[in-house]
Image (cartoon, rainbow, N blue to C red; front, side):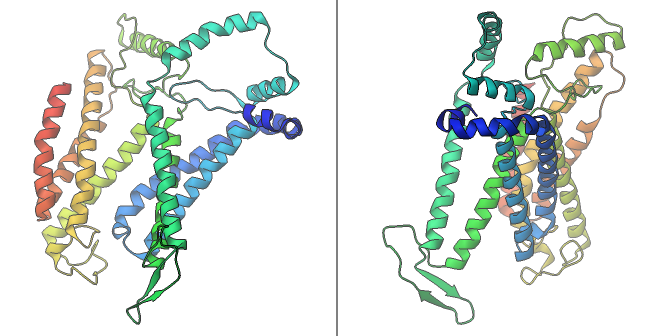
Length: 399
């Protein structure tokens, strides 16, 4: 907002009249966009593998629409923050409501500054914020990924616009066009356009998921001490509040609740959806293989790979299923280990109501690790066999 005020002072002064009204609704609008983002992320995670691996045109169009919608919601949240100055509570810094941001914007437009007394009071908070600022390597990685995303989309778009030819399936021939030779070009314009839309949807989903995960959720209490969301402004105070509540509940005296295994609640929900979905998919594939059915999900017979040994679950090719499950089960095992350590920690403090989600996670990890071997995919089995000792060694070192 400050940059726009400096570049366009007249427009900013006119905008300041409407920002006051819109700023009061900024938190609700932002929260509504966050809710839709979460729902679409969960839908994409569950739908993509079960829709036969998103290999058909209809499923690809649905996932592209999901990615475009997530990108649009991210753009709406950016506009809300830019127009009102509203900053949601995020990991690494605190929050600013739309009304507070509006007052700051009006002060900048009027040219007024904070009095010296207020400025002195804000100095300690600013120093604490500087201490809590994470290592700058994270910002460099984010900037690198953003530049890489733009370059990838630009390269694909130029290749589609500057196509050298397109493939005609009926005649099985290439129809050539005039193209600039020194620019990126493609010999299949239609397929390149499909790739561009797919990459655009994936970019929207990736950056929307990143923005949603970095936003802190509302506080909530759980018996594990895991679901009490840390206050991004005062994490130590949040820990003390949780420790006092747990001490009163357990009858012990303590000064601080150790939160070594605490994870952001949104990250936990996302990981649980991914792991549980992968575990159910692995179990379904194992049952389908044991029955000997040649229909995907016992419903559809594929045009290729009609042999039951070539299929696995909703995937027409067993190698695709093995690759997908080998990506998930190490994460599931690690997350189950974190939940198990947190449960043991909670029981050590005398808490009675302890979540047993780690049992489900470990079971899902075992099913997903066994699925590549049961699918008879040689490459997937080799990768799974190599990942098992590596994962076990990692957990032993972490323990």
